[in-house]
Length: 152
Image (cartoon, rainbow, N blue to C red; front, side):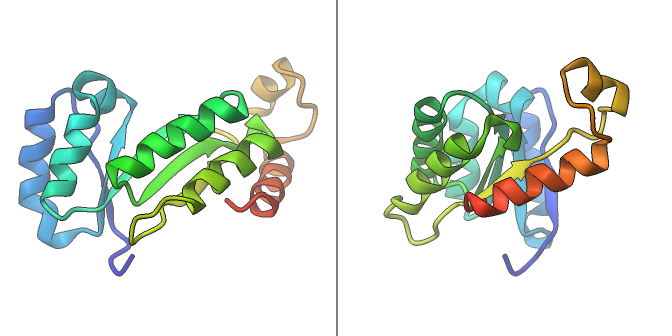
């Protein structure tokens, strides 16, 4: 992207999101549509943002079996999003499936695949509770290397 500024449209309604996007569109590179807005407004909000020419980062942090993530990635690509993300902890096969489906998207701009390593809200004790004995920084590096190797 030419402009690295991404504005999070973490708003409860499509109307409020589109109003904000209209005001900020000339100043930003993309808009982030997260779970709250996507669940309240559905893919229609992405279509309306794309219709204005805006780039969209679909921030749903996909994490499921490889076929399900690939299908969701394909649907995101068909919406014309510029970026989509997954949880790296879903494993190499899931990451590779997401990368492969985005690579097959026939659009002019192949969507970027971003990988979330460790949520910023997680402390070492949280990771230990789910079986990760290493500190967050070590887990971040491990999952980042896995993500890069899988094409994220």
